[in-house]
Length: 152
Length: 198
Image (spheres, rainbow over the protein chains, first blue to last red):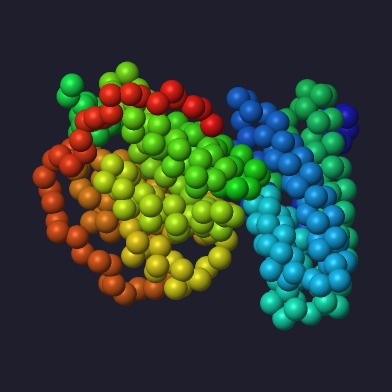
């Protein structure tokens, strides 16, 4: 089997497992459909923005939850933003944690919030690693002159 | 000087529709811009309600044939934004004699019926749930083209995205008269402000 086919197969396996395990949802597919020759790096650019945004938000959340007197409205605002951005790129598991997180904010439940923060961080790191691997495979396929299989 | 409106029935088909998109999230701005460009819209994206109004004020002041391409045919705004919310922006637009004819679409990640109703009652064309899809944008385009071409007031058309099935829409006096609105006066100010681009 030639190099391109092998890479393509790896790509399909990896992508399929991401969807199957709920790391990604249909929104990610929608983004891939928007990519075209005029903007071949669209998905990479959006995903990069997401990584930058998420790291800032996670730091802000950690800080906000360390305050003597916690401003839950502020915490909620950050979580809302995180929920929005993860939803926009299709990072389903991160988004789901944010939903639970917001409930704890409403209840002003510090322990709940801290648990969610940790979960959000874990899910973010997982999806980040998996996306990087996926986009890496994509790059390799393109560089080898192949085309990237579309996962529907 | 007579103001030439580019909502003329014969020309709107050949012109690209111009959308002003408003969202405080950089990720969502990037995505909506792409969705709109892929759907053949001309797009201007800003990050806040106040910048949107700045842009619209600018567009209003350069209301001559040379600047037709600045004319905004549709505004799409996020609901939850710091400072001015999308709802507040909607109200300001609908209360402006010069801007109220521009259809406004609200985008939100939250499916809250009272919020949706409030937006629609305030004059929003549609309330789209985020993440916005290509099919939403395409449907919007058809709806806007239809109202432009037929000179109908946008609220008369029956594609409304609602979560409830009742007919509590405020009914406007139906006017199949020309879409060119006589209440829009030509720019009166002797001094044009220097155009500031966002």
